[in-house]
Length: 303
Image (cartoon, rainbow, N blue to C red; front, side):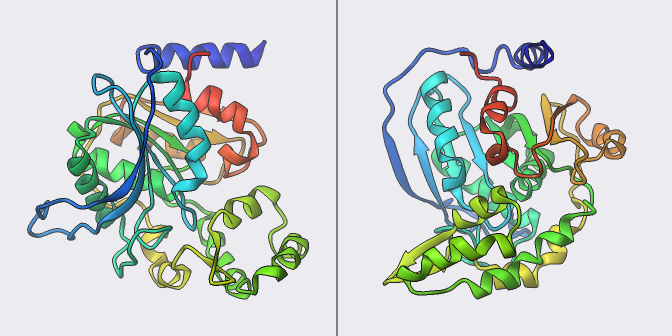
């Protein structure tokens, strides 16, 4: 079938990536900070919150990077499944101003790349495989272009290094997020009324991943106001010089405005080995809308 052919082609693309035996996993949680400033003239790294699943040191580790307004927990199920199936170390990370990581006035992709470089250095996790969604995708691309020796290969989920026409619409979520800050017992009203605000159920699930209860009240684990003020940094094309020659997969939704076919030629200039795969009818949040297909084609995990 067409799906079997797609999965087979994906497996051939990454046939040497995921073959490994199972290993006993242990959960390690903490905050990593480089002991040195990576570049005297560049942004100073901030200590990112992360969760690391332990595995074999002989295999390239896998790092998941979440999208805008999300956090490391959004990929936890996928990280655990991948770690068990491949025996690799798997890292999930909170970007600055997201989750449990510090807030920062500088959320440029260059700054977020510097944060990630510091964490990878601290944990000794390079070269690594980067699987990233949306905002995390541009962070990973920035890292690969700046420090290609740190990246074994890339998997980009519905994002390109260029300007996306629908990107400004994402920030329209911020005013709605500000209205959801209520007492714990009233969260049920949010769940009932949210379809009026967030019509796509996958978007609601994506956002509510960042809604947590603190002292009896629900709050967002994301500094939405800070990100709102820096939205121009997210809306622009990636302003990083360099070329990444490693294996790169761009996974996209049908009719995606975040990575349209018109972007392919320019993407190929930055990532000459780039390949493109399409998942039908998934929308921007592929891993929530169709998790099984995302797992099979995006991860290339051998059953």
